[in-house]
Length: 161
Image 1: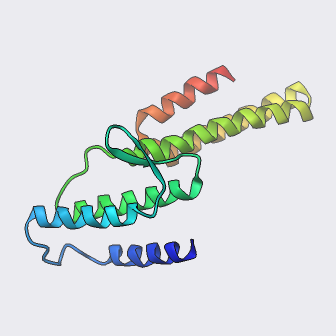
Image 2: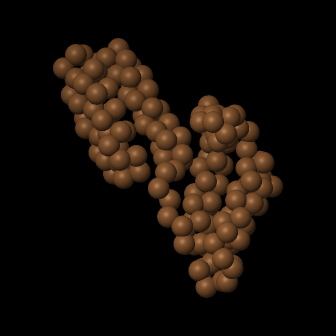
């Protein structure tokens, strides 16, 4: 795992170097290089097939999910450096939507613990604070990434609490 992380760090450093000044040839050659880098990195991640032929990581294995999200972001940056624009990105649905689901599960667990340990009035105030704080987290961190879907799902869920 340390070896994989060190390779990823080196690739991250290389990805930060300005590639726009490098002549990569025409768009097809540049795109092929990006795909090859993606496929090479993808070999390190345990995935299952979903969405047709697109391989996606298990959302249960946190390390694979982290590696996938990082690799997919590097692939997007490579394609952008080639002059392509990204219109659909599976990472938004896998990486950020999973974080929203975890946040919702954490709130439900927290609600149970708070109501067991405190009186009803204190518990209600604590939950109102946590829900308000969580909404802010979603707006600041996730809302930009997943647009309306995550926020709508969170609002619907929070109404049920």
